[in-house]
Length: 207
Image (cartoon, rainbow, N blue to C red; front, side, top):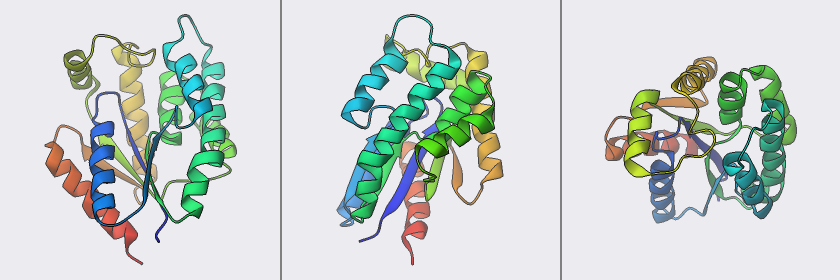
């Protein structure tokens, strides 16, 4: 059994959920045991926190928001992710600490390093083996969202400038950690993206 911690990152509308589903299906067909999860909301407590973070009406102070994400992460990693990895499973996760650095750090204009350190403390230092960053222009991402839904959560509804800061932060993280973070153009065909991801994951599975 091969344990592996894989995360998918990117702006809202970049196609993370689609690629997470395709990756999970491919790994399971290959005989791997896969846990597909997400943040926030990968546990019972996480679902309650997700509702507060993304759907509560009214203002949430940026530092309070960052702490809510950290609380979700601490519980999720301790009760869901680490046990799965200990069992030798592959974890495919939609969003992790890079999202906090991008959204709560750059988006909310908090100190990105402080947000990262908070996340690492919450997760007891756990980093992904591989992170797939689906990069997309925020304006195009908004067009995708407009075509697929009628209601936005608190972060999706932020102004374009917010999402531009998020994208720039993501690309900065990828530049700083090229061995961990693979950047892919989210406007490429779904099958092409899935093939690129499978190629990189296959390399990560090699001894």
